[in-house]
Amino acid sequence: MIKQIQKRNGTFVLFDRARIENAIQKASIAVGKDLSGTLLISITDQVIADLETTTKPIHVEQVQDIVEQKLFQSELFVIAKAYILYRKEHEQLR
Image 1 (cartoon, rainbow, N blue to C red):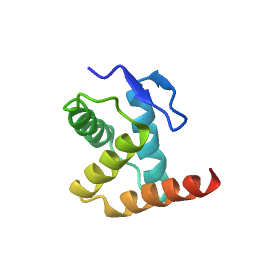
Image 2: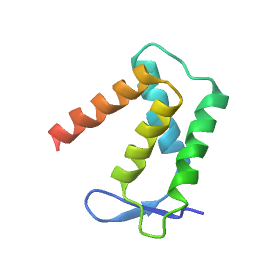
Image 3: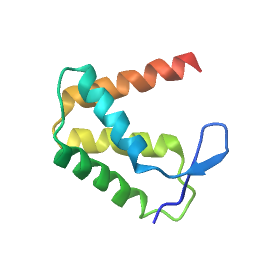
Image 4: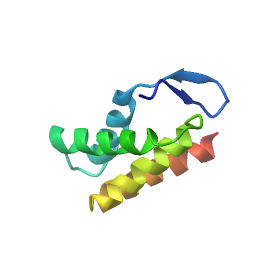
């Protein structure tokens, strides 16, 4: 079970699956789509399953990379693109 995530500044915060679900949901809303609860939960579960295979500390960037991968694997290309663009915009702001 995942307990902590390392933030960009190096600090650790408690893992919260709702943050993944919210990010995916925001990306879907940004493109005018609304993911069903079941699909949103399924994608989040897949992300968590991948993260649980690592023994190293989990970094927020790693989580986001896996979210992108799972969106593509689910053929949610438009949502994946919105998610990637959002990440890029925030990277430039930092």
